[in-house]
Amino acid sequence: MNAIWQDIKTRLQSELTKNTFSLWVDPIRYLEKRDRTVILNCPNKFSRNWVLENYFDLIRDRFLQAGADAVELVFKPTAPKESPEPPFIAPEPTQLTLPSISGNGGGAHLRKDFTFDRFVVGKSNEFAYSASKALADEGCVDYHCLLMLANTGLGKSHLSHAIGHSILKCKPTTRVRYMTAEDFTNEMISSLKQNRIEAFKDKYRRGCDVLLLEEVHFLSGKQKTQSELGYTLDCLANDHKRIICTSALAPKDVPAMSGELTSRLTAGLVTTIGGPDFDTRVRILRKKAAEHNLSLSAEVIEFLASRLKRDVRQMESALKSLKARAELLKAKVDPELAKEVVGCLVSGRRSVSPDDIATLVCRYYKLDPGLMRSASRKKVHTGPRNIYVYLCRRYTDETIQEIAKTISRSHSAVIYASELVEHQMKRDEKMRRQLEFLSRKIENMKP
Image (cartoon, rainbow, N blue to C red; front, side, top):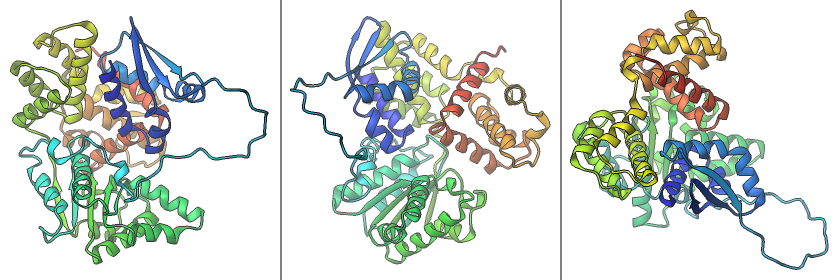
């Protein structure tokens, strides 16, 4: 059960902000399992109460997704040490200390498991992998800027982190700055409010040797941030500093992306990562199973590879669920158990059509179906439209082009809408609950 909890923490680390995870989730430790009760330890009562109030549902859902649906969660605070009660002195107001950042600036935020030796190379990602490895080895290529394009869960973040790890391993003093486009935007806004914009510019233009910038497609419409980032990239490029960016969309397809920033992002090498083919999925499953200490027969692995085609995250979810069921139910990991797990992940998708999802979404949000195809940019219309796209990509076998036709949009607009919903789910509890409700309704639809 401790292994399951560590897997859940790893997943939560990618879903929550760095400070939130470090302050509230990372300190939680697994204590024991009594019958059906899993006991987790929080550092103190305040931490326990905060977690129960803000993150209990999220943590419980992750246990359910891991296959531990028959357990009850109990959060137990560490008992304070006995000590004589000191006289009361009114304390001066203080701020909560945030996690420190390492001297190189970004190494502290790199995922330890995202390294080159743990990346499975196949036909769909071979060029991106080779380009990333070459850029990590300073001086062996004539380009200093790399842009990786891929949908969620296909490995662009893994390669970005791997570059950072490789560089720091060879030269630990390298000033590596890793962040998402949203982090960059928020830090710039904060610097402006605090009259520290010059320090912000100096940090990224002169205090940076390697810039790892994720999710640049979320700069859509943020003109001031685009302008500042463009100047920063020009400054780094002029000093021959290495720049690695990732995006779900080509810059030219990102709504309201400036021509200047588009030109800068595509000035170096541009690579794409597609979905893994069957042979690559088999190798990914074998490697991930070994990492989870899960013994799978060739028959089980090939069955999983034939059904789990979406992305690596889907495969990891299946393996974690298999392991949890095997441990909790004392069950043998055989083809029947594999079919049961896959059924929870992909069941019913072929029986659900875009029309079914459109009807459900329009009814839930009380939206006229005709507005799905309209050109309206009002939030009350774009929100449900984006959710419709996300659910279609998740629960139907329709291609992106076919989904785009149903709402009179382009191929890139569908990808952007789906990515936007995934991004918002991590930060908007209300939206996450709405999507969970709609997902359950879709999964319960009859053929």
